[in-house]
Image 1 (cartoon, rainbow, N blue to C red):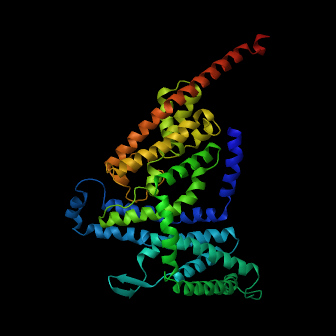
Image 2: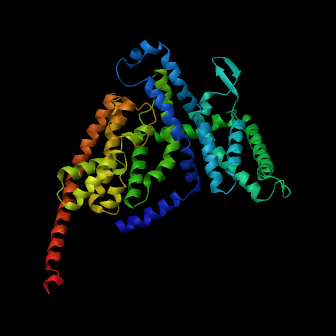
Image 3: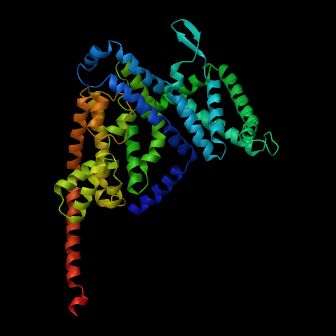
Amino acid sequence: MIDKLEKIFIPLAEKIGKNRYLLAIRDGFLLTTPLSIIGSFFLLVANFPIPNWVEFWAKFFGDNWTSYMSKPTNATFDIMAIFAVIGIAYSFSRELNVDKLSGAAVALVSWFILMPYSVTDGNVTLPGIPLGWIGSKGIFVGIITAFISVHIYAFVKKKGWMIKMPEGVPPAVTQSFEALVPSAVVLTIFFLINILFSLTPYGNAFDFIFKCLQGPLQSLGSTVGAVLIAMGFQHVFWFFGINGGSIVGSIMQPILTPLSMENLAAYQAGNPLPHVINQQFYDLFTTFGGAGSTLSMVIAMVLFCKSKRIKDLSRISFAPALFGINEPIIFGLPIVLNPMILIPYLLTPLINILVSYFVMLSGLVPFCSGVSLPWATPVIISGFLTTGWRGALLQLILLIGGIFIYMPFVKMMDKQYIKDEVESVSDSDNAISFDDL
């Protein structure tokens, strides 16, 4: 059975893992990560989930102190699509072996060419750039624009359609002139694309892509079924020793990130949060201690196991698991290609998803606010920071539930390891020793 699954999933994972488009999305979004964490830090300070927090600090800094704290948050999240365009175009230029800075610059300008420069307020339309388009609503247009513009740029350069400078000219000057013709071709093409979209009922590329692509994908990605499928694939890949988080994350992140940003905007405005499922739900309420929610497994090993192998491994793995690092367990136990542990490894995250989804949907626990946290933030602390004390309690309950799911399988494995250790000692006692000769 496992051999058949290997033949299916390993080639699939290799193809996905080497796909240059997904690699560019994965690496490009890394540019947004530190900025979103910094912006979230200021938002957390202004809205820390403790009663009377705002009122207490208002005594020292005035009633408007939270408006000052919101500036860094707005400066990062409101223009997140700009960072995504730059990061993805830069990474994709590296994949196509063209100048990375030129590729990123051309993609950004192409994206702005497609953008509508008008803001509607009631019946009045004013010139300006809507923040929505440079924030969450513009991410998919940015991804598509980055790929198309860099592709065209690389095609023109490889055809040799460039201005050649004589020898002796400084490299920086040569590079800028070599980029002139490819950049002009790309921007002209996007100028014509913008005209074509202006003739459609949508009026521009941003409205078209948001209504026909991004909106439906976000609606699909925000369903519990989609998250269950994504999480299932992620763990099957890990079972075969392939980084499932990297593969599945590159597909899910462009869908879940805008949902987080919409929740964050509503959270800042004091409005009801629109989405149960977003990036923080996926990251913070499905797995604890890494893929498979292996922190529950490590605790079960500490509490119920007696074999030397598992006791030693659990001591080594406990501290890293608190911070989401579980490679010692995945490859040391191992989980990889270990059918004895496959069922709880797949089942625990899926149960966590279902319980978290319906508990939040019922209103017992608030939706995730969209605040970005460092990926190594320990369980319970992360739940408290993103949803308050009820989120922390939910994480604790899920963590304990995971311990009981893993317990019978861990004890069965421990029994086998104890048997192996006894046989190993017996074999060593029966071995011929030169000391006896």
